[in-house]
Length: 129
Image (cartoon, rainbow, N blue to C red; front, side, top):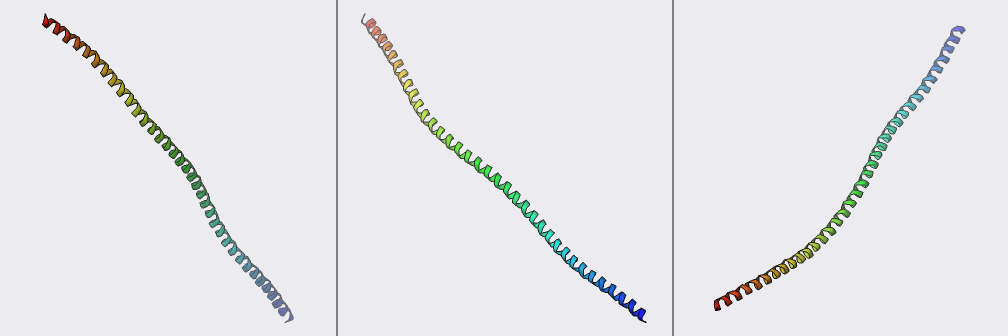
């Protein structure tokens, strides 16, 4: 009987060791679950980092677009100034050309009037004869 009790005691010790091992495994499983949670959080963080990188690229694109827009505004200002100068120069040029046309017309008219006067004078002289 003693031998059976020793054997039962031995088996119970083994069972206790197995139960302790199972408790340790439960702790390990709990740690694995926590690790899974950590991994999921890391995945979310990776997605957030990726989103931040995309936002940074978008910000860079916006900076480039802002610079381009400023260049366009400056170009528009230069064009407006050039257009204003062109209008002023056009008015001055038209005035100059108009004066030249009037002067030429006056000169031509004066020459014609002198010729008409000579012809009339000659006709008058011929009529007197």
